[in-house]
Length: 485
Image (cartoon, rainbow, N blue to C red; front, side):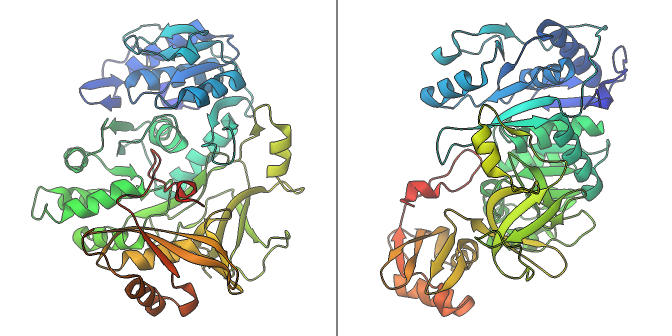
């Protein structure tokens, strides 16, 4: 377990070393990545923790790989984080050093740290790798901080290896795969799955830098086999498909990919159906969190099913519980997801209270996500317990299915659903709608009838509020707290 990236071992000195990562015109072969990361690992060996200014560049990859090889926990920093939040993360994680590109201008919050500039051309053929426990912390990734200051989730080497190996099994992921994505590298999706995943398999990753439909088509048509994205990206691809009919276009590129994978938020059924209709290729979903890495996933040899995130991955135990902690026997009922397995984090840095509250006595992690489970084990997430479970008129209602119903209306471009207090119902359902035609949006009663016809009368929105755009974070998740939840 010393090496999370076995493909690097013995790569030095190879003149035919395959491509490891590509960012635009900047390519690093496995031999180059091996030597550059070994050189940097020698410089940071013995450091307590290091921060990584996680731009979408080869320097970030070298920095993270070097930290993993040196056995030094890395703290990926979002370059767009505000000054107050960044200062909190730095004070909480207390890194001794920040790793960055030579031309990066770092904010004042990092001014007290030693700075090491990452050199992707550095060469070093000798490195003494430390023997590391599977429980050794590899990364400290900070949560979004929606319920308070961000917390640092300590991810051990065991969790990263377990998740990536489970995905190898589920997706038939091999060293022949070429992954295409444009995800940020400070988060689980873009960094662990999108970079360490290919490197653990001995494959390669092509990072687009900035997401465009043209970039996706270009890379998939020139050897890419897998695409990772978030729902916002797939929504844009679905729209772009309408203007890319015929051979050699986006439709051909997506149809030729071995796997199209969506994560970080629920993929609207409407977008999944649009892509499948245009390409004959379904988008598969998986479900994970910063604290748990990946919990479920649709298998490559399974059938994509709109609105589901697949079954639990190998090694992951999943159950649904009532509000009082009672384990549900009827998995068709809505309950909170709890998971247990080798994919879990070890705890929140400096927060034993939060860590204790996050786990049950028998070791299950309380995700806060609400779901049902189909008879064949496919999980259907209905939303977050805090913002997406609406209790109205004695019913438990998931916001997700109402959002999907709204998106089936031809006049609705985007939709979010929340609950707000109601003296009669307990909570009433509120729809936040971005119409295709702001000058002539679908009416409130029209949308209520539309939802009631597709689902059930008690699931219809009682209030409709129109917006120009829904507030989203960098991963495309709708920030419902910004809607007044």
